[in-house]
Image (cartoon, rainbow, N blue to C red; front, side):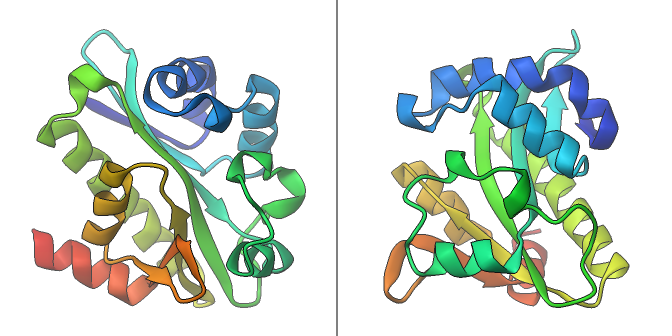
Length: 184
């Protein structure tokens, strides 16, 4: 297995759609155009794992949220996060408090063993550490889950449902780092 992230991930965007098609409910599979738009808005928005043939077998898609979008998510005004687009994403790290949003975690069924998931989480942790070092304004991470496995995964990352919006999970960046450090 080999990690991939940043600009190098661009060549695997079509594979993201293929993975989503077999791992997510149909209403959560976004278009390639929307995916490319989000990717090119903020290129450090994916971490993935490649198998020995160079095929993408799993990924985590995340980005820094614009503040109005964060507020709309918290208030439950965004029913399905596949509608998030380039206006919802910071292009660079803002010079003000901001949060990340995990939009998708997906792994092909035949690779949903501990190794791929652990490797993805490690690479995501490394990216979040880099974000925290790049900006003192990084507050935390939001995410939602569409399955019981997804909710368990978010709990392992130190995330908890928000009061008043149980479909949205949150952890401060320090809670996330602590959950990761405690698990290793």
